[in-house]
Figure 1 (cartoon, rainbow, N blue to C red):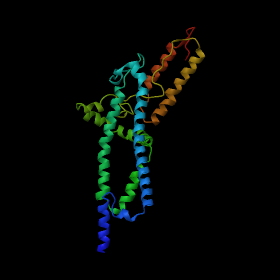
Figure 2 (spheres, rainbow, N blue to C red):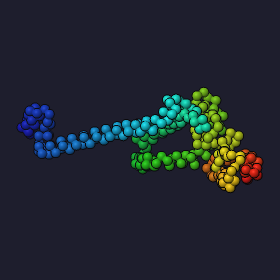
Figure 3 (tube, rainbow, N blue to C red):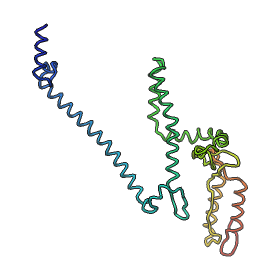
Length: 271
């Protein structure tokens, strides 16, 4: 046994770059292993650079897509909150701020929950529960995010609407953070719509722009028929989506304006 140990020690001293065990492996196998290691390093390095190239491509694509808006409105497009299609003045500050705020809220909720789940699975969960619970949590990542969005729109938003009046009254006066709870509810904004005096009316049509004097009464009448359908069936659809429909007195006011103001060339009411 001592002679074997002396031989291995002598081999290691003769070539420090090669371990004693490698001397017992045939040279052909070592060369094959070295080639495979080289190919593996090359492949992993290539995929790493590919990820960076994809990220750079996404950035270039976003910049190229934003150039028309930046040319038309200048750098102020990113800092302006104005959005007026009539005067063609647009700003991206509100969407940017909304994205940052909702992302921050998502992180504020998601990070503690994820750490809590990880801590429970590794330290507190019984052994028999770890695998099925871990697998169920991993399956959540396979669900497309649009499914969570639709669930929030049709399930969470109506339920959250019951909580909104309390949040508005309680947190709306807080400096800075209170901005998230002020203003009219938008249904799918930071806060959702709720019945009451502060409700935001939504229906199949919310405004009509037509000439009072119509040169083609038949076409004008068909247009008004469409808006009549929007106020009737559109309201029904709005209710199914838990939106607040247009009040009946407003609809009656609009319909009376059709009868009194939209006329043909002879002055006869079209509706």
